[in-house]
Image (tube, rainbow, N blue to C red; front, side, top):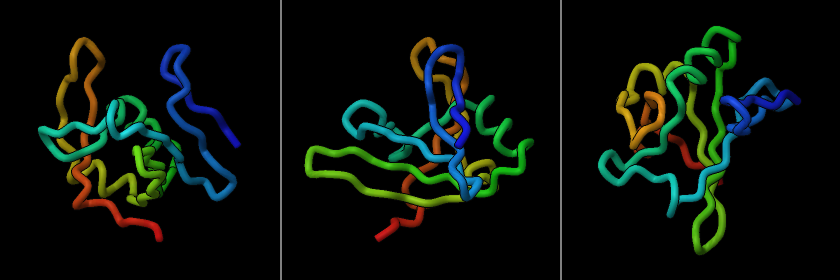
Length: 102
């Protein structure tokens, strides 16, 4: 398992199946404008460069957790680049491009 950081902040892990796993609190991280979750553009490009194929998002809600799956290529092809507050550029992938893991 490999921990991925942006500066000192832990943003996710690469698991033993070579998938990037991220956790997001819906109330805090869901971008309503796009109905999407975001990831740093730098991190997304690094994942692509490292040959990571899939991303798993664990969504924390008030009712429990949901899990979603997408590919790095899907995020690059369908993500919306935007700058949120004073943070770095991010790619936001709308939930319609995710597959819910049951």
